[in-house]
Image (cartoon, rainbow, N blue to C red):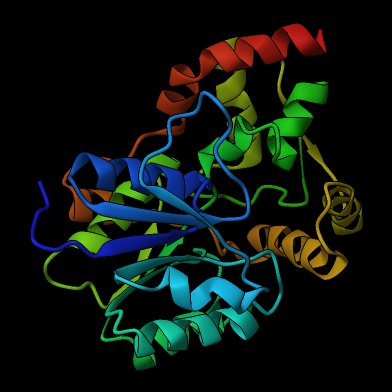
Length: 296
């Protein structure tokens, strides 16, 4: 149990896929948590730590959020230029004597890339202690009804991508959170980027095949054009520039293989093997059986 300090770890994106899981891990080890986000926990959902309202684009309470904080987990807003609000926030945190920062980025986006890249670079150049998590695509996207894949599986049993035969090292958010927990709490700072993948690299055809074999759902991968995928993202509420960028990432997966990699990060950092997609779907098969009933 952690008992050395009364200061908090601030988790932005407090109800998100990784922040919520990191919160549970931190709480289990006795850390004080401040979960910051625009959404609040729904009635009946377990809430650990204190919750504070937070909006990247409204800095009126940012100084208050950073009081008595020694580490921050950074989850960017859905924007092509999150550095415009994130770097000023990081400066405030540094002025408030926060020492450690962990950024959630993407395996697709290096330090010299767009979106998260400028924030990645700023942390490396200015933060005393830092880590950048660069996970591959989340397995939870297949089960989350708010995500395009989870939604389309519920509506039709299909996965729509412009990725073709490109491969991806799909990773469980639990494994990402476990790495994030260590990056936030290990005595020695990581001071590096951490590319996080599952144990294998798969095409979307492979993914549909695993879903079929494990659940009986007649899942199919439907190949669409980047333009069609952009329209799907926009229909889901994403800004046009961000929707176009995400569709373009599918093209790069297909043409450049930019997500076709497998790393040992989960094992090296946490001491356990990452969960495979088959294991993940097997553990969530009840949800897929419900989908099967909906799309028949």
